[in-house]
Image (cartoon, rainbow, N blue to C red; front, side, top):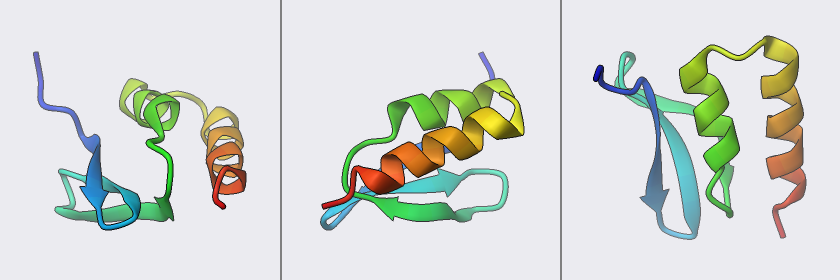
Length: 62
């Protein structure tokens, strides 16, 4: 099994998506773990689905 490119890393107060290829953070800070978004990024889902998931998790912020 190949190494995943995107993973969720726990940071104080929530989660940050980490890009292993770039060795840096990707996207926004999330209070809830973005499991579906991580799965979509790693599976190569279409851009519309990724944007929809990003919006949903952004709204989940408190």
